[in-house]
Image (cartoon, rainbow, N blue to C red; front, side):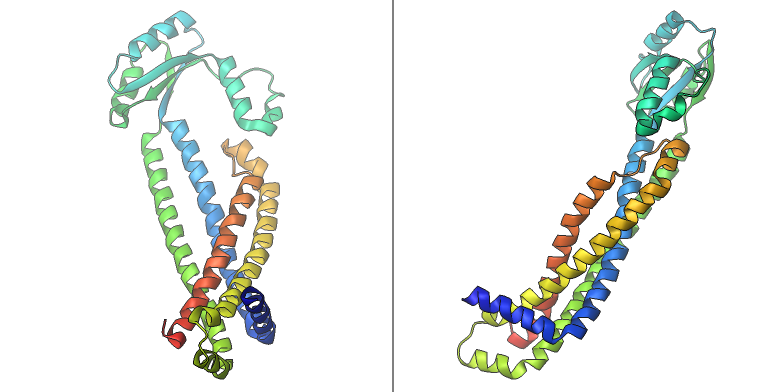
Length: 295
């Protein structure tokens, strides 16, 4: 009976204060949409950072066409003895092309039209100690048959610093938006509390517990939060679907970089928004009632 009363009163209060409720829903939806933009950007930046780290925690030594496989294997055996080298292996141009096709996924058909394989044979050196990376690169350049060395440690360090700055900034902004959303819900619930001040006083006088009184307001806040979460999730999903349609293939073909799959992102965003909706609504309600109930 108590649960039925709580739910009934929550919906009655919500529709009784529909105008303020709608304002709160719009405000929280806007906050969650901004939050979703930062979340989408952050998770894709994280993926890009991992891709960059995967590309640049190694040194790729390009070999001339005259360098034989035996010469390359001798180079591999010698470079493995250098301090800071975790592993080294010889990669043929055919293996390099197969790796490219795998990485490009559904867009690998773009490589089928090449008349010949433009990639060189190479030796790939995995770096175990990044502090030794410069010395390893200089050592690799001394071998006969080396045409070029692909190694951009300074660029990677700068990119990773920028990535960390963006990640920290996004977290700060998201926390700020959540706090604002809680304040918005709190103010909305306060209006309902003031409208029912006499009724709440009578309920307290006859012995109703604080949680019995707080229940409908708590559920009302959760309703506002969940509606806002649902609306913002639908808009965010549509936006991300459009983003993938417009730039998904271009990211792969131009930068050899994937963006986070739509299903994975929306699935996680759903749970995050539901949790935020419930938490924002509940916290806003509790804060708005705290002073009134002296709890």
